[in-house]
Image (tube, helix red, strand yellow):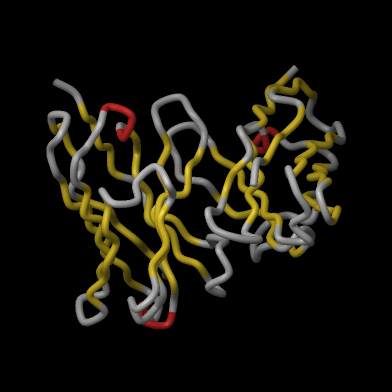
Length: 106
Length: 119
């Protein structure tokens, strides 16, 4: 299953609301997860099963979607949110990731 | 506190072998499936392999099938990845990751270990 994220990069300002889209090449029901990765660090799970917030993750992160189209929304962007974001499907093996979306400071 | 520490990375020539380890602590290791995920320099994430909590079930990405073997020693709380017939495109940081439900998503990751395949 191919996962395609858009945009590949995004510039935004502190306080903005941003949306990242992930599209699957076939239906994956709600088996979609989101990770944040900062330079030199391991990925960090933000959201699992489309919309469940991982413990300790701020509520400004939210996810939605089903089937083939999914979104990650970050409201009220904070300085620590500038990072690369990956979607990942776990509908079946092999588990696959999107190519990443780099969120940069405008 | 959940912690996973990878080791065993390094430089190896094409065609060579390497064994990675992931020492886990802070959770009941045998209860959880684990995966290896890799990231080539400057690139995205690629899932490599999965192993069930008991070790009885394993899955691999097509790119490593037949060359890599994942196994675990639950008495030592350690996950392994045996890598043979290494190629230049295996060069990456390799992460071990804990799978909280065995469903294929990952709530804790190690810090990663770099494998460089080059002549």
